[in-house]
Image (tube, rainbow, N blue to C red; front, side, top):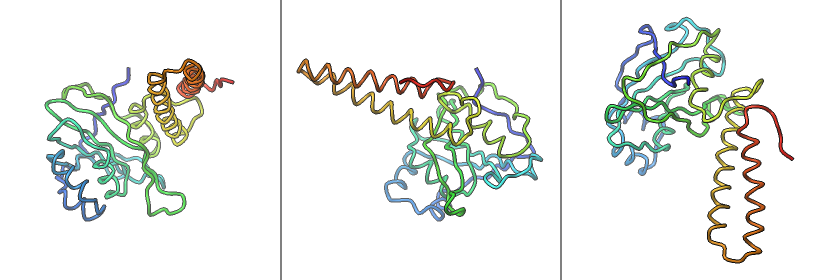
Length: 228
């Protein structure tokens, strides 16, 4: 199994505490999100900056730099609204390393410039690892030609399912989100089946559930097999 953590070069070390009010200035969070920051986040450190001048990789239009943020938590959960608030404040892709009680997990969304407005960012759902011990082994950075390829290689281990042959990063992320939506449909159908008392309705719901599970299986397979 590929470890989802990476060893970042000393040349890329940034090591600056990022005050919460600086994030607020650039993302204008709601009162609810500010309260989540106060309750859940102890400190944010801008740990590494992966850029042409720090790791000698060429930038590409969609990935000019990659940032690594270390986030010390006050409680085990960190809501997605908090991560998105930070992402909205920083105009580069970010990988978050969350720290809580001697454990660590890596979290990131697929973040890309909007095709209709290059000054805005499109942020996918967040992908994350399970909690690992703070001293978990780390991989060396992969050998790649540019920051765009590096971004893909850093994001891949966070995905719940592998990419398919010839499938680009955006297509893989889109499929991951389809899987998430389909899982919710399956769960909703299963809950409906448990509550249903009438036999005829149970048969119909069971048939629908079988189709949903078949569609979900088709989305999770690593090849292009389709089910009719």
